[in-house]
Length: 385
Image (cartoon, rainbow, N blue to C red; front, side, top):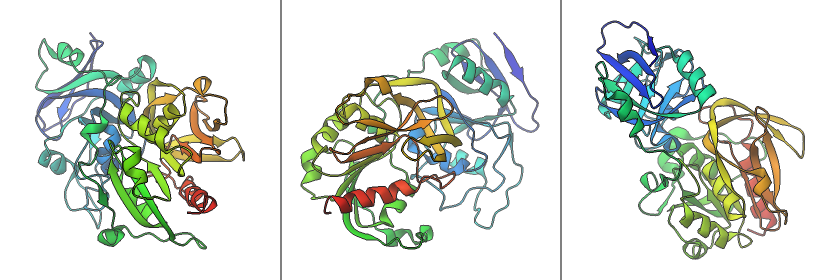
């Protein structure tokens, strides 16, 4: 059993136990509670508030590689859902002060108000190296010294592979997204782009608020439906296009959504991102697999195979579409990750669908890939939306 220790003053002790027997000893940060999940890491330098509220992180303990977190506090606008979604949060050093004109509360106060466990004062570099070398692992944050059963508790955490986590984060009822209710997030579109008179139905597999904002700024009607909505239900709404959102976990257990997407293909333009991309890949006849440590951060280089252009993208996923499994009847890979050559985009022109693995709304992250929303508009125009 390996122990990594780092001193931190004025905080009670806490530990991270991993399923391989490793113990990281640090200090409690946030709520003094026990929490287990899959331990992953994110390489973004900013955007911790968006990371914490991203439903794609449901069931995971997120480690930030940037050493100082919390320096600009927390505000009411930069949330991607109504609550913190992560199972736990690990950082090296919490900022003792926060300074931002929008900041209303400290990161730690916010985590405590939502009973979210955290750990600070450990060697996050050692933890991330382990996750990169061994792969993501189950773990548990425990207040105190951990006890003899700490590793056993980590091993008792359910594996995310094979679990349907979407039902834990999707909306319970359909709703309309009214952009006027979100005036704080009003953005300016690039010159020459106007809101199109289209009706889009978005599947909520764990949809981020900034995705809805990007769609609502481009179309006149945006309706959100639960992940369990059938193809018949969606087609009855007479959409000009259907959007498949991001979401947490393994796509294969979400068979109800895969079947629904199959019922939409060729009938209406479809655009998917992240989990929606994986679900589209499965609906088209492909397979998915779990990555060793996933892609989580705002600096992933992706190559467009049609243009040769490189976009720096924001990503958050642990599963990937298997390129070799895709059928050759019109489906093609359009984008590749330059770090590991994994699939980052798919398209089937005959079935009026395309998808990307990354987050073109990039919250947080670069805006290189927002053009995919405009491609979705162009596809709907082409189909006579």
